[in-house]
Image 1 (cartoon, rainbow, N blue to C red):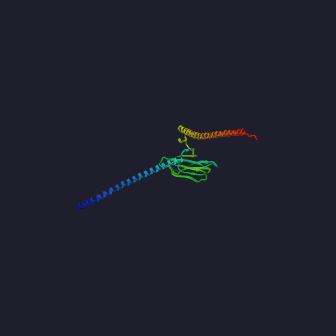
Image 2: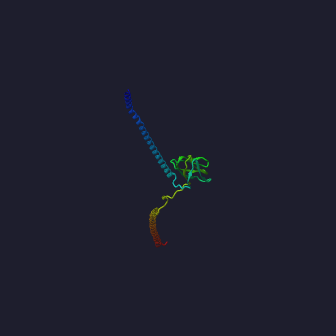
Image 3: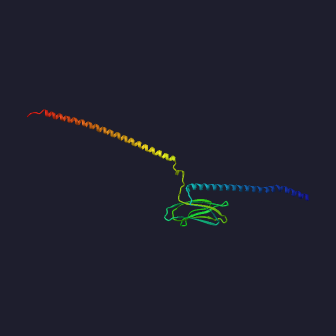
Length: 256
């Protein structure tokens, strides 16, 4: 009887063993699949983050080329910004002054990956005219039309993270010396050559004009001289005729 019972249990064990093996192998396969999915998601996130950073850098460079050419900072400062703190910078615009272009930028760095800060600019009345939130770097530019004090605020709202911030600001639109601002010796020679050609052309035109006028005057003088000669000859002929006529009258007198 015991032998029969052991034989039945052995058969049942043999039947259940393949199913148990499949059940044991199944969670491992699912785990490997989940790990692969997580790895793919991490890679996709890293790629998206890298593409975003590249786009931000390209946009920043384009903005610098467009609005910050010739920028000369009046204030360039790098300072530590403690957690849960704000830093204020001020720029005064004199009373009754003409509108002034104010430009600048900021850059934040930290030991950890996240180094974003909050940056804003307010006018003398306290109105926000420029603001950036959760940005590690940025540029700003605006026309200060109101006289008074403009405030630049850099804020670190992190609880435990200290950051190093570089801030630059300047007024006006000063331009650096560019190659196109300089005149080379070749340009001077070309300018002199062009001037000489213009003088030569003008002199040639004036000489041709004067020559044509001289020819016209000579023709007029020739005509006047010819007319005078003809007039003189006619006068001589008339005078001779008159003398001859008078002599003929005196020689043919009759005694009455």
